[in-house]
Length: 141
Image (cartoon, rainbow, N blue to C red):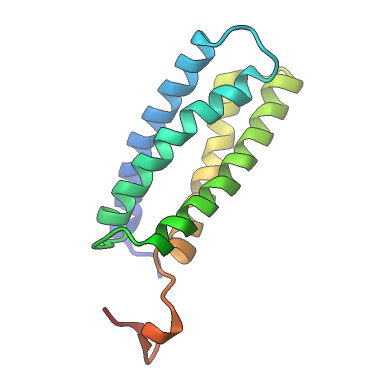
């Protein structure tokens, strides 16, 4: 079940994450030399710090994980690898191949990625509990 509090916290972190990612994306576009797949390269550069920021705050504040576990971090990284691959693909197609606006393309792609990120983070990364640690369907700690 998605709670109102989780949505507000995820959106708050998402806004700060978006500011960080968007700023680094445009800074990278400015600083990178004219190369093939410049927008895709800028996306990789901007995505990594944003992913770490997101994990730190969402694990502790949004989904209230008391400690970083190897399992949740591994699942989080797996989800983020999928999402960065999708974002690179879509941004690369829109900007590098079809010559759409980098800003509008980034906003469109990352809006889709944000929704997918929330669903995967909530239902796969932070709510997954091994069967051995469940009693009557509830996680025990």
